[in-house]
Length: 136
Image (tube, rainbow, N blue to C red; front, side):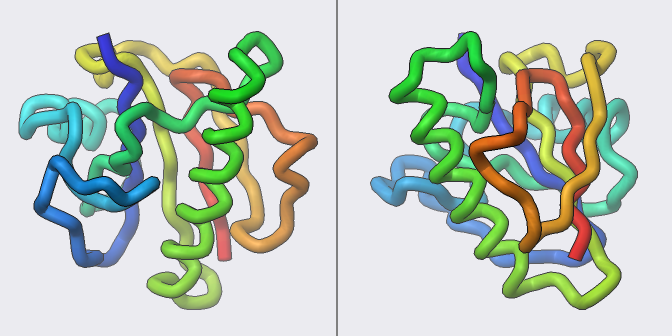
């Protein structure tokens, strides 16, 4: 199984449609298909536009993770926030959700809200099945 990460937002954003990209993180397909995108939109997000965040493994930050994988997730999250900050206007937000592929319609384990440019990456925990709302 694969850990997939998704974002939901109120605006259309450009995607990388090369699912075999070597980029560290990009917005576009990797693991998920249309079915997974529809389920995560219906069951997790409040926004009209949903995208997979592709990094060849999802974003999860937890004390129970392998330290190297956790550090990579922190780096991915910072990069994602930088990308999304360039698209969002003041007062807007995006949502992030990570889960095992096929579990998009299952009950989430938690929710948190963070300011897109004002959080300490070393003080947050984002385990799988947690909806994170990033506000600008």
